[in-house]
Image (tube, rainbow over the protein chains, first blue to last red):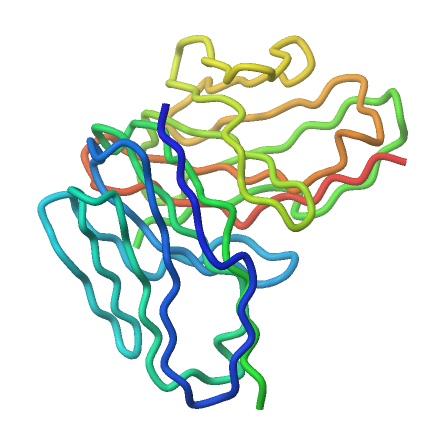
Length: 113
Length: 115
């Protein structure tokens, strides 16, 4: 049974810093891994999706990497801004797009002005 | 991009009543839809998977007679919380896939409060 873990659970950094959020998963047989952002009381915003055959994806100040062999993914945020404050969730999908998505517990990020 | 809507976005109901939440795929046909619940400051937990025209598959610990799921068409799935209790208060999110794409698309969520 797939388990997805995220550390740290919470992180507070000053504005402008680069930071890394970590995600680990127990079953490397994944279809893809996705990073989401969730603002308080809101739904999910998809940030980056990495297919199982890919190593990383980039969008603006965000870069996500995937290492299936070690069961790890990282989300790198460059030059953090107060607007980046949110909860970040990573999630693994099983063998196809119709497979279950298993979510990590999330990292609550706070960027101090 | 693919859009999934949920209705209502927020609902308050009295204990013992039933409430229905709709999940719609607006610009694609959703062969499979998923329902999640999220308690405050916790992650999303999958409740059930539904395929159009067949019975939903529930995750362990989810009561199928309490959380009725219907996926009668390729664009609509409904979740009915029957005889709701305060402990059912949660954020319910659906997702949908057309089976051919490489990702699932999530709805904006429904906040249920049972008083």
